[in-house]
Length: 417
Image (spheres, rainbow, N blue to C red):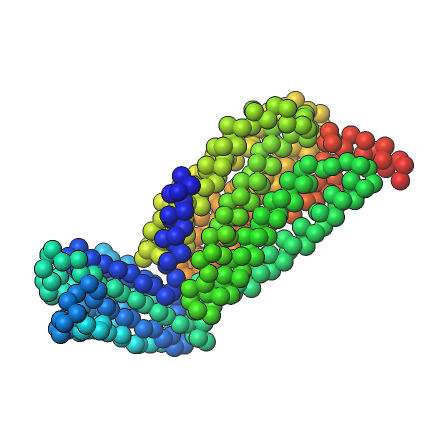
C-alpha cells in the first residue's frame, strides 16, 4: 500500500502547469486530452510544443497533427461526442506541421473579457497521418509539452488564486498553537510535576500539520515562480499530512472510548492496535486515491468523482466508530462526564463530517471554485478541530479538566492557588 501511494504521489507531482506527456505513436488514439487551465479575465499566454522522439535523425519529413482548444461552456457537449467529432465544438483548432528532426513550438494566447473560464487542451490524429508515418514495430514517441501563464504572469491557475496566502495564514496559526501548547506542557510539568499525554499528542499532531503546511507553502511559492514547484517539498508535505490526520483521528477515537475518563495508561493498548492499523490504512487510502487520474478533464480537485465519495465513506465509517465509542462511554458515566462526551461528539463531528459535507457542497458550486472549497475547507475544519481540542485540554474551566483521570487533583490545586 505504501509503495502504491508513493507511485501515485510521483505521478501527481509530474502534473503541473508545465505539462509534459509522452505517447507511443503506434498506441495513439484518434483524440487525446492534454490538460485544463483556469484563466482569469484578461490575456493568458501558452506554448504548446510537439516533438517526435526515437525517429531516424535524417528524417526530413513534416507530419501534421491537429491541436484543439475547448471552452468550459462547450466542454460537456464535446466529450459526449465521438472522438473525431469533438472538434466541431472546439473554440480553436489548428493543424500543426511537426518537423520530425526538430519538433515545433506553437505559441498562443487566450482572452476573457466578461468572466473567468476553464480551457481544455487536446490534440487529434483522426486521419491517422501521424500513426501511418512510422512502421508499427518502431518505438517512436510523440512528446507533448504545454506551458501556461495566467494573467499577471503567474503560474497559478484560477482555482489556485489566493491559496498560497490562505495556507500561509493557517500555517502561522498552527505555529502559534504549537508554541502555546508546548508552553502549557512545560508549565504543567514545572508547577505540578505532571506530564499531560493528551496535550503532548496534540502538540505532535500540530507539529506534523505545521510541517505539512509549511512545506506546502514553500512549494506553492516556488510553483508561482516556475510552474513546477519542488517535488521534494510536495512529498514531505503529503507524508506529514497523512501522519497528522492519523494522529488527530486516533486522539478522537481513544477519547471516545474512555481514554482519560475510564483509563489513562496504555496497559490495554492492544485493544486499540487493530483499529489504529485500520485507521492508518484508511488515512493512506484517503490520500492515495486523491492522486488517481489527477488532472483528468472531469476532475476539478483531487477528490472529484468516485475517489471523493470513497474517501467520504471512509470518513463516515470513522465517524460511526467514533460515535459508537461515545455512546458506550456515555451510558456508563455520570451527568458531568456525559456533558463532556456530548462536547467531544460535537468537536469530533466537525472533523469527521466536514469532508462528506464539503464533497456534497461541491455538487452545487461553480467548477473553478471547487478546488478552493475542498482544499481550504478541509484545512480549516481540521485546524478548527485542533483549536477546540486545545481549549479542551488546556482550559482549567473546561469539563475535561474536572473529569479527566489525569486531572483528578484539579479542584485541590485550585484550593491551593
